[in-house]
Image (cartoon, rainbow, N blue to C red; front, side, top):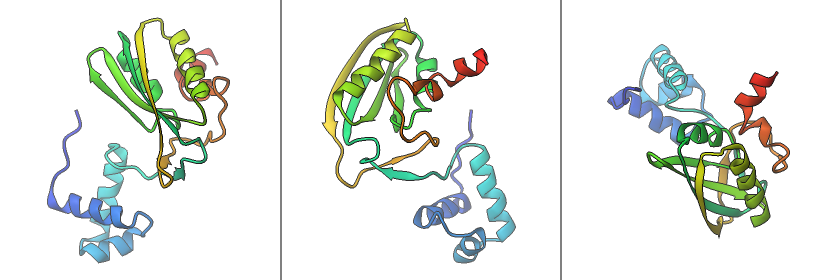
Length: 171
């Protein structure tokens, strides 16, 4: 279990990073009045414990502006959560209860969503049901990248992300 970071110095560092994530550690430590070495150690600790990360956000026009809210009932939730958390097209995934996952899927069309979900369903026989609501992202929406596979083609390229563990085992 990860201990919750809530001390004042840590929150000061995180707030300053949120204002300008591109500033140097020297600039950051001067701005907030904390020792450079302390700030450097604290940021490295937060990154290694996966409490903060730095990523590139891209416009929704790259993947498409179609957004689908998907709920999946399955008896294999942990594997599903792990796989979905690696996909650039799934900026948000979370457990609803012990047998259900919800996610947002970004696509160019409803057909891409259908192809993606057919692939997921065909590889996970524990899926009991899938429900989908479709919408459109606002013009200014950005999506955080998880890796460099930007121009993925569904379902052909899904093995690079969703089924990475299985591909590595087969190598």
